[in-house]
Image (cartoon, rainbow, N blue to C red):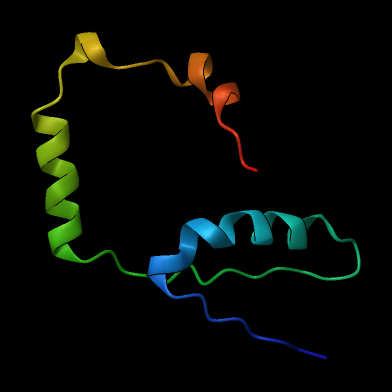
Length: 71
């Protein structure tokens, strides 16, 4: 059997734990569409944030990655 789930962008943060759970099940496979495009307006927001960031305020990923709660 094949089942396809379409998860809209606005609920992706809710879907992250679901996808992680589905990937942990040994009797199914999870295939993600790699051909997604990022809108130009969103790319520009990221570019602006990078340009306006202060390197002294940045945190190292290795230091903070274990502080996230995915409950």
